[in-house]
Image (cartoon, rainbow, N blue to C red; front, side, top):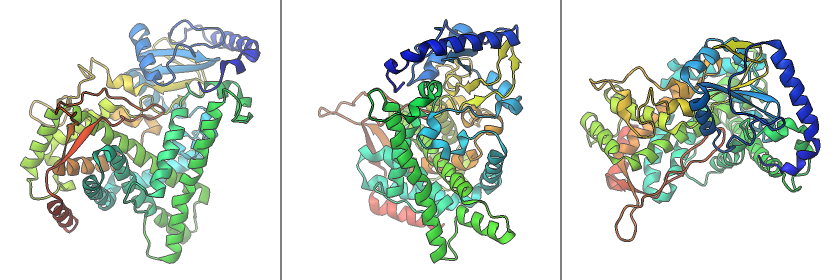
Length: 514
């Protein structure tokens, strides 16, 4: 949990007494039982039962024993976990009025990630942001961003021919970051040594592991810990939060300042942020600078990291499933041929590619517990009492592994999303985008960016397992990062060009002028 247990024990008796009082008070309000869960200790609750790095696995194991909706408490704080899409839809979608808020999770402001409005409380400020996002990323606006997404995909192809295979996953992350940075800030990212790309990488690496309720148990319970010196023994959570806050400060200000400088030097400079500023000045309704910064920064992180993680999941799966890769490339060859790169106009004719991307979203489950919701009223569901003030989280990872819906869930099978006639099914893995009023507003733009990067890569390259000195394939176990969002770590692999560089350059040039 990031803090030594020795810091907890001296005040344990107080918390234990408070937890008992709270539990009795809650049960006294309603005679119905709380959602079931394992036996819990008076003070710690289930804190020792949950794997802090992969809590979604623990919660799925509980679901197998107790049912789709389970609960526990951490030092008296109630957590309700929804392990099925039905339960999440019933509560977070159909009862969104009382489940659209976010919990106060101490590690979010500690680490500087309150810059991301995804974690913001449900209030008038959040509704303003939501309106900005819906105006910017609604489905009808997606074609406006195709030029930057296409440019990022083509830049990826050239970079893949320049950098060694060991850098592939970094290049995939660079691709999605490049597309959204160009769209929002007008900032062009071309290489891995770009300063803003590295700021993003360090902010995510240091901050994301801290942003879950499980990791925030100790500072939530003992707020004074946030103010203790980071050099004290057992204070790793404070040290890591300070590192994260350093990078998130740059993350918010660096690209915003770039856009302001460009607007001053070039009146014709255009991007989402510049247009938003000019429109506000023209109609006399300028958006305050802190709001603009948070809107832009949230667009950046949501568009870059999550989409990048889906691409990483896809390539990791293709390396381990060469038959899937061959079928996808065969579909591309049939529809597009070998003489040009794909365009967005080809999408409707490539159902297997879309099925493969949906399977990558399911298999990767890159935001395994979503962002936790918060109940603002007492509620009753399926005979269980859910107290006001509960953290309510949807176990997306468990939904993606539901064998009733996805047989053999650990296998990578794009055919799950195709009908017998080869058309896409109605299952668009919507549960991976969130719920209710908190559903991801950038899902249409993200889908387009992921798709064009995927078809471009598979036209120009193949991905294979690396081989040892004897020519045998290296059989490595897939590992994943952890935190509020996760991504696969790169396996040893080979990136095999399907064209020589002069031909690839010519194809990119022709595509840019098509």
